[in-house]
Length: 296
Ligand code: HSE
Picture (cartoon, rainbow, N blue to C red):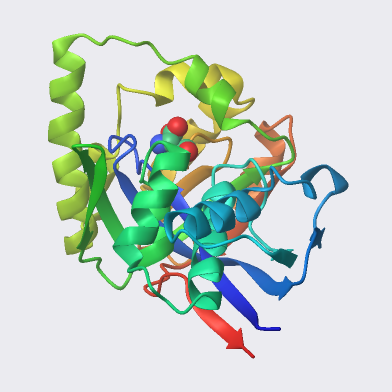
């Protein structure tokens, strides 16, 4: 029976004002192996709670086979996840992408990456994590007539990403439930203008512009009450000159800087001002999207 292992990068979505649109792939990975069997489902490598048929890698696997009009036979799935779960670093998107790509490879690569993005976007509801997980790098996406359209944007090579990951999780459904359904026009204008500037600042390597542009009125202010230590950490990061945002729906906080010594500078102060435990994880941009790392 055929076996394939797919590697998918972590992703940070939104990048401040680009809510549900911007995303960037980062150098942290989840590997998922799929092996077809005669019958049954076996999932290993993850918490017992995620070993049933609602596992995201399996649901995406089945969705791709359904779109190909192909029968779901048995499958063994092994998950080797290094992307922390429910932390705003794209762990769910990584499983969907892995499942979609695994099924497509096992059945002869009949669908394009855009086809796989269409299927998984219908499952996830927004493409901002999925698109960079599939394509790598910095992406902006829109959904038009129900289908995602993604563009890659250039990124200056000197950016350093520092993820601050707390010891508590935040389910995306909860982080979305606190958002208002309607917004003042001024806030919409604020986000459109700041979003355009974020993309240009990331391309130019302009830290001062990025720090100003990477502010938002659509989601971060509503979500920060769910994230212990948010205001204190934001104030601390702002003293360093780095740009700051919530990573995806949180609770991870993200610093983007040209300063190679940011981690060292924050390390001295972070523990002193926070209640939760925050792990600092330096990351870089991953320019390659999801790929097959072994096939037999
Ligand atoms: N754009 C999404 C959000 C990312 O902020 O809710 C998390 O899936």
